[in-house]
Image (tube, rainbow, N blue to C red; front, side, top):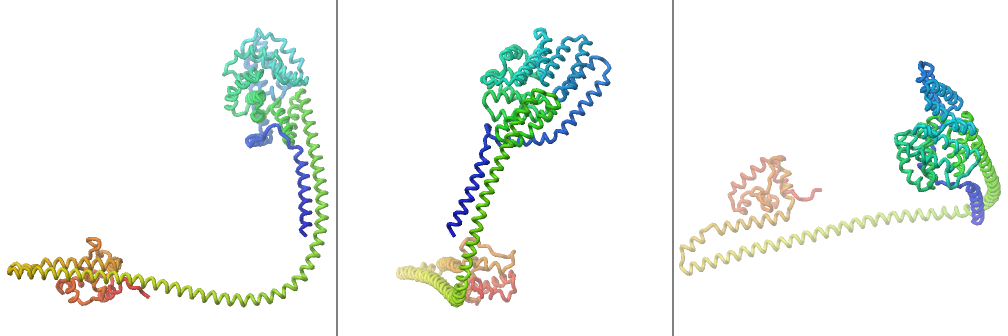
Length: 578
């Protein structure tokens, strides 16, 4: 039985290991996917799902601009509205953008503004580069003399040259490992960028590009560019471009995690702005493909191809088609691997089922043997149970008897402790009484000796005064009271609280000095000790019986219980009740 269980466990382990190995073949990523990046990708997924909403907002802006354009009366206003429509269309619809470039250039010629004509020609070159018409883009740029351009257009000229150069490299398949762009573009950037100020909309974009020439420059430029990018809400085309160039700076210094972060933020900005001429999502797709996230890569590449078709971007379509082919091939390979894993799992499952069937037959045979053994054991168990019940009954009786004996033993021990304590207390107070009596005898002998001495010396008057003086009697009474109070309160420490419980709350008695009873309490202390006769109490306390009677009468008047029960209740204070 044990061997069979081991065989089953080993078979299951082999199946699980094979499946894990097949799944692990695709676990490759150049960049570690952090929780922050995963959250950002989830945000991008939700933004892509809202694409129709962003397109609707874009179309509403375009509709308002077209309405304003149709209602414009003068040429200059029509130029600026056509230029604004180009800005909205340039990354959204290349045909419409080209239409408004043509119109705006015509209005610029009518206005006699050569700078505006050149600006529209630069915009035209951008559209040619974006749609893959690279020769036409070069021709547009050749029409412009860069030396005659004002600083603002010089920056734009530099940007268009850079845009054309990067698209030509992409079209021709140029891989630049040590530099990001050609030496001609680098010299153009270095000559132009000093004129750009931080308030220029293209400051971040061109600053980033101009520092991509070396790793050291890229590292120095990152804080400046990152400060500007992090302050945006990633909602415009300009935000997308700035985040993209920051990603390229991080790529230059080898920080792949931040590169991926800002590629995602750039893609988010492109989606919010409904841009269809997008580079960030294309690069992000390639990165996710390399990391093995084929589902997202496939979704993103379909989105990019759809927008590239709408925008008529020939260069991007070629690159995207290659990425899509790689993605679909990887997905197909993964499906094949999963199919192989499933086949291996099914084979393992079939082996497991065969072993399971054999195990079931083996178990059934063992069960039959067990049933026979169980029937024999059952009879023995019944007889044993009867014996156990008898023993259990006897055990319970013994347990009850032991419990009673234990209680009796504990009670006896407690009684012995109480008796020992009482004996100790009685011995202590007997000793105290003998000491008091001895003191009184000593004082009496001293008094007798002094009186005999005076009589022998014939000092009869002094002896008479000494015999007549009440001071000795007064001191002895005080000492008697003090000894009585001390012994009584030690015997009955709760006497005051118990006695006060018999009085009304407002009549309760407080000791003037700790450990010293009042005359009223002393009288009832004697009552508690069993001395109820007022005459005997007066003799003990060395006062008149009328004083004792009046004091007892006043105390009973303060009672919270019936007056005729008061003395009896005082005598029962501190005694146990049944």
